Length: 204
Image (cartoon, rainbow, N blue to C red; front, side, top):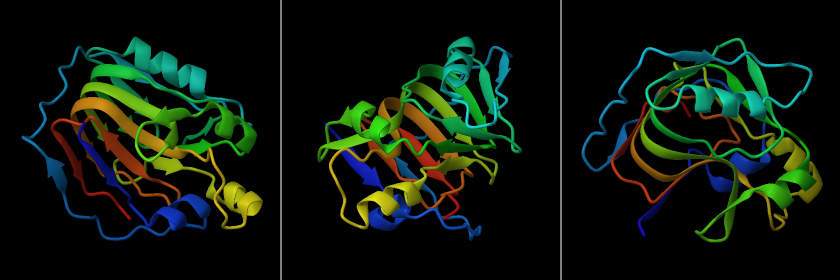
């Protein structure tokens, strides 16, 4: 098994703070293997509008990934803030993700401790896992994840307890291209069982 961890910020800072973030100069490109092929496209677009009011957006996000699987484009508009209250693991093929909005993970720490996906690398867990092939994620300099790190810090007081998940993991993927996404302070990306992926111009 090939395993590699890419932490956009030091691990503890990434998972324990959610202070306001200021854009910085884009980071350099990181890549493993040949350049991934672009997803094939069928012209279908699925645009997700946030429900607001801390209503769980996970079901409609999963529906969009399902409806636009195998050639579609899933769009999260820039002015939208999505509330993620349940775990999700879309398995997608030939999908383009225009990720301009922000995903904010809920502060229900008990739920995340008991329901995250186990990742077989140093006993890690994750609340959001993407699997599949030929996936292109473009954040356009505005999109990203807020892992609600302050909620964890307030409870744990810098003493990490078992079960705290990472927000975002690619697992069992091939030919992935990620670019122009914001590295929110609580964002950590991990890649497991990867083949041919490029991470370009992450804003730290």
